[in-house]
Amino acid sequence: MGKLYDAIDDRLAAFLGKQKVFFVASAPLAADGRLNLSPKGLDTFRILDPRTVAYLDFTGSGIETVAHVRENGRIAFLFCAFEGPPKIVRLHGAAEVIERGDDEFARLSALFPQRLGVRSVVRARLDRISDSCGYGVPLYRYEGDRSQLDDLASRMGEEAIARYRAENNARSIDGLPGLRRV
Image (cartoon, rainbow, N blue to C red):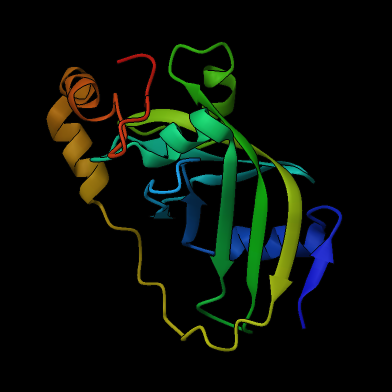
């Protein structure tokens, strides 16, 4: 049976900290706009306080979550237990995007391992925290992180990554504004 929480307590924090992958969902306001659901990993999630979380956002082929957050702030996170006892945790809230060059970027990005290719930190103030059983989630074993994102960023270098962002991260697939600093 699912439960609602007032805040992320120590038990939930421990569960969230053990998960190697999580999912981020966002949507534009337009009825015909495309929903977005993105998997995240690589030690990119942090609990800032019992009702505030953040994740490190890397340069990618799309900019949907950033564009949706800029438009309306809505965001949801999903964590599934793929190992151990079954459990699903959902975090809903209002997010903001902190880009490279923004006042808080250096402070927030310092909470994560330093990596090339980081384009922003997405911070969310949570208004709903819930769990559910997760009985239908299959069991998987974690073998390790993939190296391709770091390898690609190393081969490209910061200048090429900045050019890629300018070409691919200025607008979402629905035409919404993405990164401000491209």
